Image 1 (cartoon, rainbow, N blue to C red):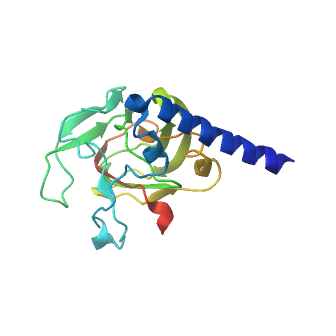
Image 2: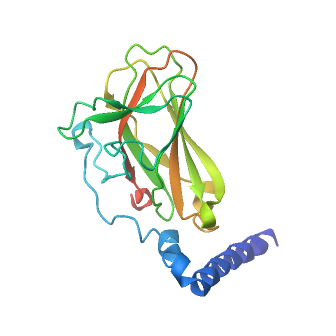
Length: 210
């Protein structure tokens, strides 16, 4: 009985979302495409290949902070600073995250089942507890549907790629079905003494294909 009710709920949700998209095409023309991941870039670049990661990523919207804070929501003293991660030749800015700050990335698309993200980070001289990464999932009318705790990157190190963190399984798998069309990445340093800088936030919205 529970399984049948669950199936009916998911089916009803998909039908409702489809009806909204059909009834308001001007506002929701891309909704069904987003639900299926069709509006995500179809190909990326193996930007982390030299570190043994051969996934294809694309740069999140303004993920390199080269357009200032455009699209980002910054609080608690977070700001766009001069200075770039040293591995790629382009770019001249990064995100500075002092203790007590919080940064929320611009909206990025999602794939049908999972989202893998990776970035460059530096915390030279920091005495904090690392930087915590969450993904906030949004639906119609920018409504927050839920949040996923991804990882906490250890502090104190020089510029390097962060670990590649993937969202999959459990509630995350249901998010596209219940109407999640986009996501934002939240970065929060933990504890005092943060010297965190973040640069070049990359996303692989097709992680579920691997």
